[in-house]
Structures are given as structure tokens and as C-alpha cells.
Length: 202
Image (cartoon, rainbow, N blue to C red; front, side, top):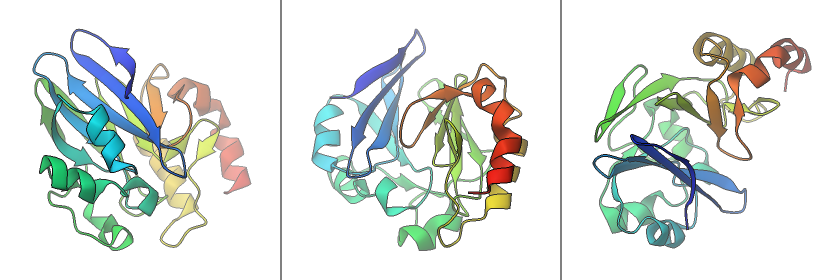
């Protein structure tokens, strides 16, 4: 079952943790229309399908192309016949092209909700975050305690720091963010650590 973490007159946000790497999978639902999107079809497609029964999921939004964030894509597409959306810069990493590419600054309509895409390269070339109703979904770009790892091929520490400073840390301190693994935090809680992160260079 999905667990509800936000429920207002306009939006419902649910999540479940799945797979070997304990990935967070988020379901963003327009409270008015019931339309929804799934962020990161990481793993355990049958479980996601069962948990999402009765929800009108329109597409799979993908924060980046690493295997642990896309393992359930095909199973969900077979069941729900919905597009897989990914920034095209991560096509090689994902080893599959998006059905509908994500682009920086685009707005995705989900019923009456509007989801803004924020390109944040560094963890991968195509890493993308999603902002909706003041809630930020960061994939592996930002965690409580630091940026996502950059020891992998295609990753770049200096670039991820630029992405954090110029794309995410311009948001209000009160902005809550929900990462691809682990627990939420806020921009304000993490902002004081930026210089320490830069020194540690992970």
C-alpha cells in the first residue's frame, strides 16, 4: 500500500519504499480530478500496480536513469499503457529512450495540478527534480546531509553543486523536499551545509 504523506484540498502525495536499494516511489494525485503521475518506477511493479489500483496514473516521471529508479517501468507500462518520461541526456544510462522526453522549465499538467521540471545535472547528466504545490522531489540530486554521489560514470561533483546552488537553493527555506531514498528534509535545514559539502567533495 502507498502511505499518504500530504493530503490537502488540491493535492495528495503518497509513497512506498521498494527494491533492494529502498527507493522511494511517489504518487502525486490531483485531489480534484483524481489524475496522477508516478515519480520513479523503481522496482516491484506488481506491488505498485496493486497499490495504485483505482488511481488514474497518466505517466511515469523519472528523476534520472540509474537502474534502481527504472526497474518497474516496463511492468507498469504493460499494465497501465502510460508513457515513460525521462530527460534525454540520461537515455544512454537508462538504456532506453523516453516515450515523452522531459525538458528543463516545462510544466506538466496533472488534472488541475501543475508540476514544474527543474533540470539538475551532476548525479547524472539528465537528473531532473519536480516541484508541485511547493513540494520538491529531488531523486538522487539532494538528500538530507548532502548531494547525491558523483563517483559514478557520467557524474560531476562541481556540476551537482552548481545545480544545487542555482536551481534548488534559490527556493524558499520552508520548501520540503522528498529524496529518492531515505527521509524528507527542507531547503532551509540543508542550506547551512553547502560549504561543508563543497569541501568534502563526494
